[in-house]
Amino acid sequence: MTELLAIGTQKGLFLAISHDDRQSWQVSSAHFPGQAVYATAFDTRGPAPRLLAGVHSSHFGPSVAVSDDLGETWQEPDTAPLAFPADAGAAVERVWQIVPAGPGQPGVVYAGTQPSALWRSEDGGRTYELVRGLWDHPHRPDWGAGFGGQAVHTVLPHPEDPERILVAMSTGGVYRTSDGGTSWAPANQGIKAYFLPDPWPEFGQCVHKVARDAANPDHYYAQNHHGVYRSTDGGDSWQSIADTLPTDFGFAMVAHPSRGGTVWSFPLTSDGERHPVDLTCQVFRSTDAGGTWQPLHAGLPDGRYYPVVLRDAMCADNASPAGVYFGTRAGEVFASRDEGETWSTVAAHLPDVLCVRAVQV
Image 1 (cartoon, rainbow, N blue to C red):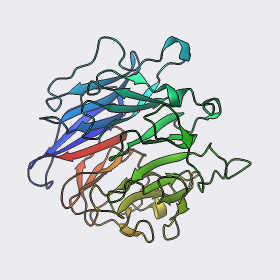
Image 2: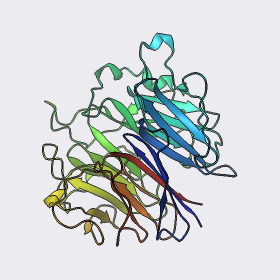
Image 3: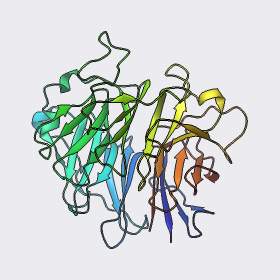
């Protein structure tokens, strides 16, 4: 088996490949050198894995590039693959998320952008149409910008019902559709927005990331701007699962790809002190759906550690046992081939890591 790891950074996309069950890695030179890559995805629904990258050029703006040969060649349309219609009065600033739909929708790919918008592709991610139902939502004028901008950063198509999609944004919170994107409703009950006059609003929360449980597609885990939550009713309500974490602030939230109840996070001290808890490089894992959390750090750097892990800079693969990966703003990438028990270094001295995605083929 071959393991593929896509590492999006502030200055290009790096591809790491392992042919020995994730024990050693070969890391490529930069694709799209000098360009920020905030989103990557592997689409394994076809005969060969397709790699998609949300690339941002300071000269030409954002785009989505597609490769069917693991980066040997790339294709981009002559015109911008994501472009607002003239009546929207907006321009795409950045692609934050790329997500292939389920196997029953071959060719369908979703993208989340800044400003907060959802896009749908029916040609494998080459060109996209704006999902007007979310863009035209009456709440949109009141969605604010988080520290990283106003963006749809989580897109979760339901694996059993293609009409159902959950998205999350900073700021704005969680929204759902059950009719394929025609209409949307907020789903934030129980998620706190401590920074607002009313800390329990219908919308306006700064949700950092949402992950779906592998065993039950209506169970979700959310990392909020101070708050870690679980929903067991498809997002109708959320309950805190932060009690045994050392802090409730962070960006990443990753669910096990095949086993229910297992999730990983990388807590940070607070929004005012954005460094690892106790200045220790450690991942926290729960195997009981957030009831309890345990720190994991065997093989990770010792001593005082300051780098941050961003919302999409942590992921799991589809192998057994599952591999877990994260990259830091110091340009390091770490991998675990045993679900977080032990760790090794994939790469160091890269530019700031913005996103990682992994798949075994």
